[in-house]
Image (cartoon, rainbow, N blue to C red; front, side, top):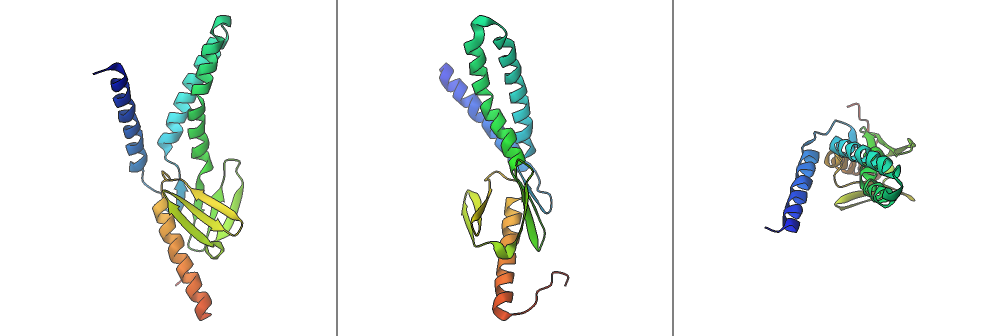
Length: 167
């Protein structure tokens, strides 16, 4: 077997291991987040590559290698950002979307004007859009809850009845 084929097989096996670990994470009630394995791998990879960048950058003739390590650290940084960027907390009446910067936006299910599912889930809320990534933990539970609450709110509007979640 050629060296390139062995590298390809090893890379695919490692990717499958990470994705299987991400799928096996259990969803917590009322929460949509990215898998913790993304954060752990991102931190480990970023720290290792940032250390290599720093050590190589101190030696004058290894600046190019340091730049290469810095570029290789970018996907790990993207994993960390994706982990913190995907936070949704929901109840039967509303949901809160929290982004990377900590900005929280409260939405009601009645605000949802459309849902598009194509791997990722896109919730359209008037002019705003909330994206739930394909690998998010708790995505299916949230979409089921949102779809049900949208049906209930539309039925209540049509029948002009009062809906209470307390019953």
